Length: 262
Image (cartoon, rainbow, N blue to C red; front, side, top):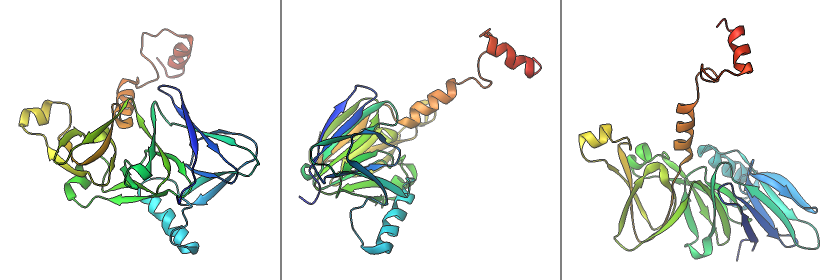
């Protein structure tokens, strides 16, 4: 294997985190901001890009980091290396309620395409790059734009998504229609396209958007029940415009109204 062989354990139900076990000199890479805790003798280092070594030299590192900017991610990633003599542990937390999905790339054709904010952590050697959508319809209406993330290698990677996650196995020619925001990841041999919702009334008043993501096998796809964009829109819609309802009657509310002339 070209990637470091790491062991792991996932804790929690709806607010999960993953604990990675590192042998001496093993390394895991993680998205900036996902770190939770680590034991002694683990060395943390911030790097450009994913540290996979592709491209070589300063220009190669800058190019790798620049590609990450296109997906809206940070220029930097963080590596965690066990520099001790025994097994050590480092943990990474999911950014919002949902599930952490372990993916063994060696069993998935060496490549996974996922939504651009799904990557959490991976064994060192996994390449975190970008995947351009070649079809204009997918690019404009696919919910993720022209650019998605791709994870390549033969090691373990951890992806995060919202709510409950289901993996669907598609047979050759079998198709599946999903909400564009509910698609988490797919293997590279799955065909991904966008389909317009049929019927004017359904499109305008159905409340489900104007487009489906159409997935055609063979291959594997991962679907989430609660996209973060849907969660955020519901929270925003329910939030009071001035910090609380008029009839809440709290002391803090009374002080707030007094200073605002109510």
